[in-house]
Length: 168
Image (cartoon, rainbow, N blue to C red; front, side):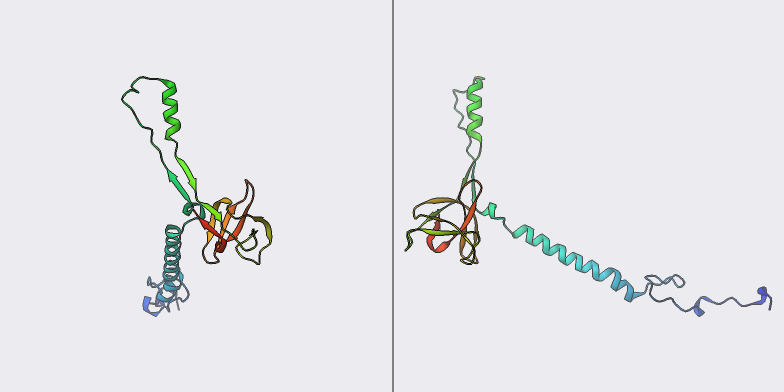
């Protein structure tokens, strides 16, 4: 049979291809594949992203919760109208914000000292002891376990139990 006399197959007689996002021959989307490839990952991404945003907005870092920031503005008197450089320098120094850290005071203990540990619990290694009445800068707090992290010196921190310490 010559090529010119053969019937061309109609669009309806071509079976649709499976496993593609768009059936090239028919021009129709394949709904199951679209759901698997686009909609479900998009929904999961939005859900996870929203969870991360909520966490970032409502979580506090340990440093934020233990620092009091006080801004002291210099008092301006009507006498300081001249351009005295020394007076201007003094007012700039007064304008610097003061940062006050919360302190932990060690309370009386039956032994006369309190163990400082490497982590928030008695299962952590003892690194030193502190005496009742001593004050230390608060670094962080583990409310779940009931321990305070204190700054021992410029390079070391340790943990003390809330039972024998209080924040001031």
